[in-house]
Image: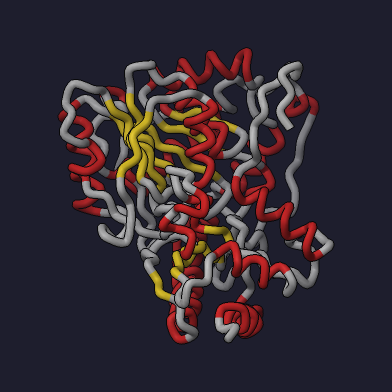
Length: 398
């Protein structure tokens, strides 16, 4: 409740947390505990997947690792990440183009925090839930670009950049997209980047789901000269490297921009846990990365296909892409996602409502009220039949 005498400005939680709180109140336990079905959750399996590498079990630390970390991140991890992109995507970056953050979202927030005030952010109307919260909290200028059934949730390059050429613009997008899984690749991705470079505008690519596509995809494959561009790439160990709990993310950008972010870290963040960075280095072991880049896309492609086929059979309309670990589903017969969640809560399950992914935040007036995001990210193959049974019973209630 707002009180004019409060010293802090009220900040609502990210949309998924509202779902989790409602679930807890209804079901009586936390989502993720034994007997629950975490379809609303945006994290991968944190155990070894078929054909994949084992997760590192431990790290060794010494007294040096208990000292303050470098503001930009430990040089060895920064260099390892640079070499990773250079090897797999043909980029030509070095460690000074990389900064380490405590996860992907802090990196995104920091970049938006220091945008010049005249820059207008361009964001699709169906996008990753917290983008809206970041933009509103930071009081950034932004324009919402239609991303609906009419354009198959895929705004074109022209739609993103618009017709006003007297404004500097920054496109903010997740690729593969959260929540839809739609992925920009090859010529589509190249066109977007070339338009940005030619017009001196910018793009902020959130590539948390880089490995959840066959083949893995990164915009850095098409950036000619990162140091003379306004291209920003956010990556993380959270998804494809299967380690959300260590809270390691990074930003790749021109050296002049990394310097600004590092200066902020020197007083605003204090760097990132050195033990977490050591664990991340183990995740980037060269032999391990080879296995991850093959097993992660393969396993989640199979999961996507299996769930998608059954979803269509039980009456859901799908608008999902070929990346990420989500299905973007539309309910039939007038059932809203909120009503569906009320049914699912009683069965120990939950989905993310489409309205939480609406950058207009229109609530019950949103055309996305009949949509929901289903996550197969944390699901083991042996939960499949139970998942389909619970969801089918909940949507076919007549």
